[in-house]
Image (cartoon, rainbow, N blue to C red; front, side, top):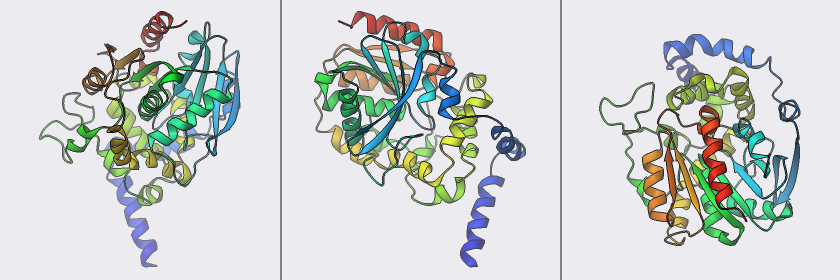
Length: 338
């Protein structure tokens, strides 16, 4: 009885402590999102020439969507998204490349094992996927958590990495250990201050069990806050997009899997210390609010990187600025393809 009471109190607090806007809209969002068909089958139908697939690699089954012919591009999404994060740029990329957008370990329709969420292990997943797809190497592109996996692929499997592209986020290193637990006074609001980002969810996702208790069946509560904080163009993610991501993270296993990427950060930092001082393959960074962090990392960790800032985009670059993202990415890939 006491446990049930505490659980109910925590859950009620989580909902009631949201801003007035969220408190008023959250009850309607669940019903509204339920109206959408968010299955992979329905989504793939909107991408002519693309098809779904899966592969058993490194002890897990990875789900992916692929289309096009040519040199292989691997697209790796981040939290709280799925392969669908790249749907706006996939068709243009597929005109001259073979494009494979992946649900990484713990994401979407891919397996969600108990462990293996450090980026070195996840890099092995992708290395084996490249081979399973019949390729010797790939252009590896990642956003958010997917960018961290992409960097780990390049660091651990340089011969298989034709080029490396990171969108808005680099791999964890020792600098992350110095990030503040509390925001700088007067800088934390509804929208991120790129000069003073407050990434409280990095800490929240370290907790095991509680996020599942709070968010099972209502992952959209956290997502809606997160999207508002990090999007400049809030309509870049429409209601159906948000329904796709909410459905992908509603289960306890999905919440656990997504949080495990963050729980592995300390191991990722340890692993980073053993990686080459500088990676030598062509590297591209495209930054929104994370430009400063990304530019500093790539300048220190890669040789002659190209780093571009999209000042009018938020964190979700491929969705907020798909035309510019496609243009910059294709210019980079075409220049470095053989």
